[in-house]
Image (tube, rainbow, N blue to C red):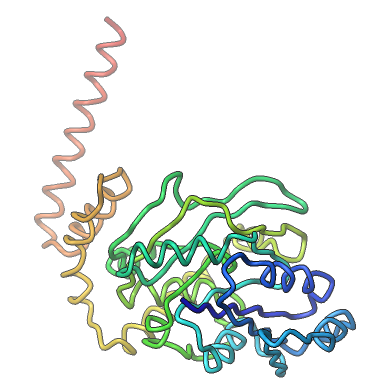
Length: 307
């Protein structure tokens, strides 16, 4: 099984060699490495890229266009069965590709894989989607109706090339330039991907001041802008896949029934969808009965503890 590893770099030359070395040290040796430099101006980047001599590495230099443009450029050149992504400031542990190869062989119907990560740098800790390996057969409807994010940051992602072929290249809209991982994740979800999240930690995720996007998303206005960006992306992929709103509605029941257990979040989603699509009178009746049920439950709890 051949992998294509894509490193996108913009002025991260001080970290880039570590990222490259982590790929070359992989225990699974069947891979190619494509490095896309997005118009870097730092001397470190030029020095590292000029020194590349390994025949498994291809270097692409382009004008600055954002992370998504790097993914598009590398996708055109990729020859692997599975495409993985590595930010220039992160590192793979040496068993990353081997772990993915084993998972892909054991789950031939899965199109999208994500491993877990370990922080280093300004912050320590781990980042897991789930405490156990978790298979999600489909999440298209939940993504479409509720904007659910079923993914991991860029460096933990691995996607079969035939799935990427369904929607790549993604248009280079100005507001999709930098949250390219979100574009990939949502496009895969809406294209009907089966996703496997692995608890195995295989990525070192560097935390530093320049990559802390969570701080930006804590801003209320940025959150609103992000929701609008994602909704525009959703509309593009819906048109691109030839889907209608009713197509997603038909998916919702099978998606939830495929879950091994329904959580409170699942129930909340189902209720929201029901209230959104049911006639107004039916919705009002349901809400009224829910209010009575909650009131009765609260009173029973209070009386129990008072007694």
